[in-house]
Length: 404
Image: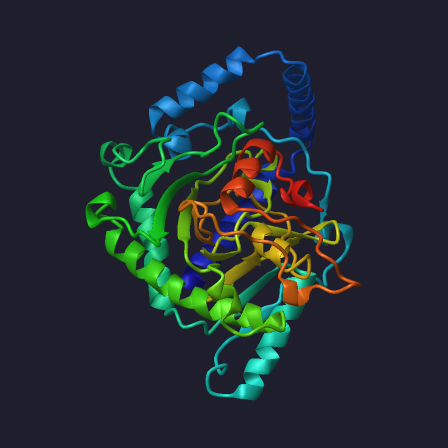
């Protein structure tokens, strides 16, 4: 199944690029669009309300059909609310750099062979310090479960519209679906629909979950929670701490997920699947299908992170960078829009942000010294997320605000 999907995708992508993407006429059109985008942003910064844009957003939201609804309607040009300006950073491959590869770590023997565990811990440390991202294989979650979760996401978004609309809301519920959770606050929206599920510490009731994906959402979340315990052990050891250190301070207590559906885009060069950002959590565990599109910012270049059968992607979040005192890095990443689709992915976030706690977090004392003093002040997660939500709409990290 995986190989067949990949082959079909590559053939379709090559055909699209040859027939449409590189036509010279498109470059001039895109330049005019981005000039208009800059003019709109200038007006917005001056306090001028773009009422036409607000109406377009409201009309899009009111359909409750999301981006998939636009594609189903047969559009050939994307609405202006989806246009993004060109990125300041280039792809590494476009600049002639072809040797960059996100680390892949095999967890197969870490429980049986102490020497193998030491090697894995070292690889996790190196990846967390240099990249902020790594892929893991032989992680304990069966490939069949990964495939079932991807299929469950596709079933939800491709079910009858009237049933799907029942879950559409902008209110925070145990499970909900919408398109662009920051629809009315971001400068440009992205080419995807998503459903949210809050799984721990308070799991949703069965009736809160849609029937088409209920069982697999529950099962996959349980598997990710179990995997999270192992990952936090390895990360603790990578910091030179007791294996249970990060677990004991609550890093694995909360889990929620966003499952994304990226329809094929008629103008992928003009928009994004997910805008550049860092994750405001401890760690994120990502499952992506065969299509790909994830890019990681490394040394001021975008590096592709192509899908690997059976692998999961792990990345360091802002909160782990803070408590590790910058030893581990939370880096910007994005998802490019694609001419082929739909693409499905599931991002699971370890954070207690949805379950307010008074627990104080700060750089771990065991990691500090005269030569390496604390770089951040004490925080609570609610305070951290409140700032992130209101101030960090451009994809920049919240961490600078909390520097000492």
